[in-house]
Image 1 (cartoon, rainbow, N blue to C red):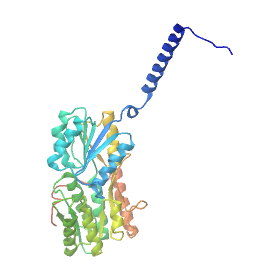
Image 2: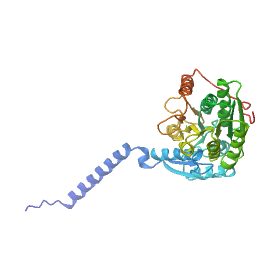
Image 3: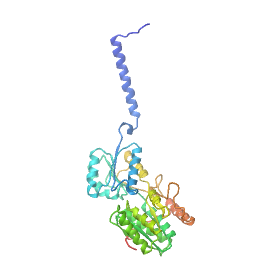
Image 4: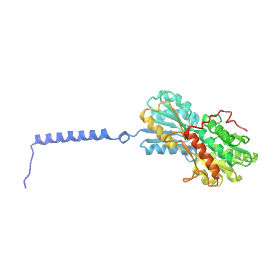
Length: 349
């Protein structure tokens, strides 16, 4: 058997050339890898309540899962109280998180305070109503459009001449938008209908929300709407017990009261946060306010959904379904535009 031997110098040269080739090929490979493969971008979501509330905070957590699916290195904090918001934001920014989301409009002021100190971090207010500076943005779905749709449906289904609504955070812009539009939508169907609004102190308090809902039913309301977090459960329970209609905020609300719930305003925070994250990474989000609605391309921000297959409870008559579809088309085309004031969203009748 013949052995081919090489001199030590030849071996060293070959090894040197081989090493160079390996380094060059690795450099070329790295250059073509997506950025997230090299080192994932870091995103954090801060939530005002529990991710298990089957409502607002669960939707925020769904947004976190969407970012994780997109390749972000994710973290989250639950039950972040207003007094702790600025420090929580500051902590994540110091730890190198380049995208920090506060899942409530109450994060706007803390982000305006913290944002300028961390110019390489993008801060996003979920359900905010304004951007600030170069790196604090707000996004939301169009509460006006969906509040109006619910008002139309409530008035169409109404038999007593009275409907109600239980909400928290009185005066918050997106609450004003949804509650005020609920009033306007109902009045567009029946100018004489009475709409009574009650505000509770705590978005998470299902007991207080149920007491408010029961008082509305005793007053004569046969339809209940509302914009609460865990407290939404109280509205659904009251409607179920008293045999009136309501709308929820998640498909879990349908499961609790399938006869009482006519639909849910299911907010697409995964889609909204995903779209905003892409803009942030591209450097095009800046200090903008993005509003997603039925007239938006790609992401509508929310949708009416009774269950995974149906938009509305099968008990909703065809003529009501047709009326809602017509309103949706008017919003999508821009033919219908609704503006509301704090007076439209007032407490009481």
